[in-house]
Amino acid sequence: MPQFNDTELTAAVIKSFEETPDPRVKFLMEELVKSLHEYVRKTDLTFDEWTYAIDVLTRTGQKCTSSRQEFILLSDVLGVSMLVDAVNHREREGATETTVLGPFYVGEHKPMPHGTDVSPGLSGESMFVQSRVTDLKGQPLAGVPVDIWHADDDGFYDSQKPNYETRGPSSRARFITDADGRFFFRTILPCSYPIPTDGPVGEMILQTRRHPMRPAHVHFLVDAPGYEPLVTHVFIEGDRYLDTDVVFGVKDELVAKIEKRTDALMPDGKPASAPWHLMSYDFRMRPGKGTAPKPMLTVTEDA
Amino acid sequence: MPQFNDTELTAAVIKSFEETPDPRVKFLMEELVKSLHEYVRKTDLTFDEWTYAIDVLTRTGQKCTSSRQEFILLSDVLGVSMLVDAVNHREREGATETTVLGPFYVGEHKPMPHGTDVSPGLSGESMFVQSRVTDLKGQPLAGVPVDIWHADDDGFYDSQKPNYETRGPSSRARFITDADGRFFFRTILPCSYPIPTDGPVGEMILQTRRHPMRPAHVHFLVDAPGYEPLVTHVFIEGDRYLDTDVVFGVKDELVAKIEKRTDALMPDGKPASAPWHLMSYDFRMRPGKGTAPKPMLTVTEDA
Image 1 (cartoon, rainbow over the protein chains, first blue to last red):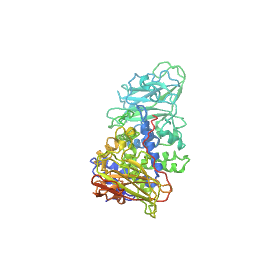
Image 2 (spheres, helix red, strand yellow):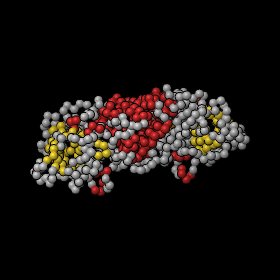
Image 3 (tube, rainbow over the protein chains, first blue to last red):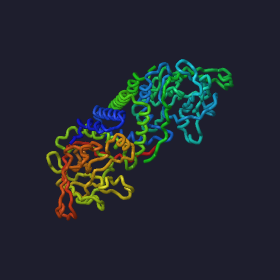
Image 4 (cartoon, rainbow over the protein chains, first blue to last red):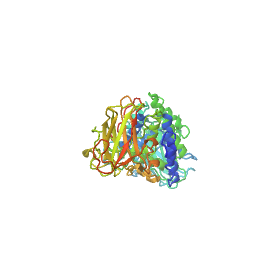
C-alpha cells in the first residue's frame, strides 16, 4: 500500500496522471505537480499560509464579473502574462514588439470611420493618432481591423465605469486600414493610472509596498489574415512609470515620442481647437497563423 | 530603461517586491514568481493554455459557496493539501498520523452525549465507534472536544445535500472525552465516494482519466489544549480505493480493521438490532501549540 507521506507523495500524484490521453495535458499536469510541490517543500509552507492562499484564490475568482477579470490582473502583476507573451514571440524578425492584452479588452469593437473622435465630450488634452500597418518589407496591409482602447483622463477605462452596458464604448473603437494600410483617429491623451486595487490583487500590491501604476498607453490589437495577430501598446514617452510598470508591459521599442503641436489643422485637414498632441506609430506584421485573443470577461455562474 | 523581455523579466518582477516589509511575505512572493516563471519557460506555455488556466481558476473561485470549497478540492487532488500537511508534521514522536481536512468540514460541531446515534434514520449498516484520546505516554486526556464527520451510505456529506441549513447536521457531531479520555457513538458504516465532479476539478479528473473516488473513512478533528490539533481520518480496511485515493490522504497507520459483530449488545450495553460493525481506534496527541483549522466555506461576495 502506498504511504502518501512527504517523500513518496509527489511520485504518487504524478503517477495518477499516467493514463491522461493527451500527452501535452499529461506533461502540463506533471510539471504543475512538480512545481507546486517544490514550492511547498522549499518554503515549508504553513497551514495559515496555505489557508490564506486558498482564500485569496477564491476571492480572486469571485471578484471576476462581466466587466472585470481579476485572475488576468493577478497574472499581469506577477509578470506571468508578459512572460507567456515573451515565450510565444521569441522570433520577431523586425515585427512590432508585443505586450500584454490586459483585462480591459471587451472583444471586437465597433468599426468607425477614419478621423472619428473616439472620446467625444471627455475632458483631457486632444490627441491625433496616425498609423500604418505593413508587412515586414513595409508593404501596406489593406482592410485590416485594428481595435484600439485606452484609459481616460481620470485613469479609468469605459468598461470600469457605471452603466457601461447602456452608455456604450468610449475611448474604444475599431478602424479598418485603407488601401495604403493607414488608419487615424482623434482622442484624448491618456494618462498613467492605477490598476484596480479594491480586490485581492490590490491587497497584494499594497501589502508588498509596490505601486499600482501603469504608464500611459494606448492598446492596439491588429488582426490581419495570414499574419500573427499583434497585441501591443504604444506608451507615452516621459511617463514616470515606464521603468516600473506594475504589469511589466513596457519595451523600449513601444515607447513613442508624442509631439505637442499648435497647428490650426490636424493631419486630416480638419481644424484643431487647441494645442494638441500627435502620436505617430506604425505596425509591422509578421506572417503566421493564430487567432486574435478573445476577451475573458463573461463568467458562467453555475454555482 | 528596463526591457521587460524573456531574459530580464523574472529579475524585474522579483525586484518589484524588494520593499515588502515582512521578510516571510517577501520570500514567499519571490519564490512564487520564480516558480511560476520557471513553469511557463519549461512548458513554453501557449496563449490558449494560459487562457484555459485563467478560465479554470476563475470558474474554480466562482464554484465556491457557503457549502463548497472548490479550491481546497483542487489543492487536494493535486496532492498539495497532503504535502502541506506532511511538511508541517515531519516529527510525529509516536503521535497519530495526520491527513487532510478536506472540504466538508463546516466548523465546530454540536456536542452530543456519548453513545448518540449521529445518523438516525439513514440507510446503511450499523457501526459503533469507540476511541480513546491520550498523550504520547498513554495517559488519558479528559474534556477534549472531538469533531467527527463522514459521508453517508449514498456517498454524500450532509452539507452537500439540499436544505442543509434547515435540516441540520447528520453523520456529523462533537463529543467531549470523559475522565478516561474515551468517547463513543453510533453511526452507519461509511462507503467510498466520489469527490464532486460537477466543477472544474471534476473536469480535470475526467480529462486525465483519473477516478474521483475516496476510500471509505471517518474524519476526526481532536483539539486538546496544550497539544497539536490532530486532523485525521480513520480508513476502513479492505476498501478498493485505499491505494489510489483521489486526494492521496491514506497512510498505513490510519487504516483500521473494522470487526463485523453479531453480539446482541453494543459495547455500551445497549441492544444492537442487527449485525453491526465495530471501529476501535485510539488517538495519541503530541504536545504543542496551534489552533484547529477553521472551515473555509463562507465566501465574501464583494464583487
